[in-house]
Length: 288
Image 1 (cartoon, rainbow, N blue to C red):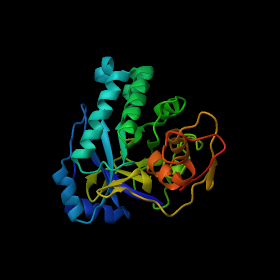
Image 2: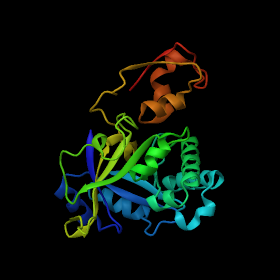
Image 3: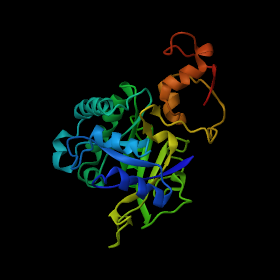
């Protein structure tokens, strides 16, 4: 189930935000929860006001270290900032197990320090995952393509690849330009920022400069936990046979399972037994 949403530099009033969503057939807003390079930080009170207007789905974004802090693009800093991002999600009341949480990795940061920026992003993802949340990364296609080759990569991605200046009701995050269709191919693994200001032309909704996005539902958060998408079966099928060296976390990550290893374990507890760390080659696990 692909859901449209909006992303603006400054949060509009709650009533305006709802009217803008209605204009594009959207259901969610991006929320900048904070971070060391966040130029605008939303507050839990603003999110609560949006909820009062009937907006209940959000993409949570943390703005980490950027090109002005190249010396801090390290694994240690990434782990520290990942922990900080998890705390911010808790402050917003959206930190149930498996809740998606995104890191903003700007293209200029990747171009300034390709290796260190990916080290930082990978460590951030590992810390967020260890905190029980589901890490994603927002970036242009080049950083995401490089990140996919790494073992420490996000569970899902938010692709910045603009193709138009207005809403497209048929936009699909799995047809995003610039990123191989085989990278993060599962349901719940993609968001696409497809409309924005580029080429000297603005993108506006209701007179406000915005980016327009389309997301797999499972990349969105809510007060009640991760948004569940019951609209599509998983493309890999309904079962997975455990291979040597597998862990539940790795299977959940590579299969793009909303809710992470916790959701996979809950579905297969009768097969696995009481210890989720003890899975055996040859066991057949059901996929959501």
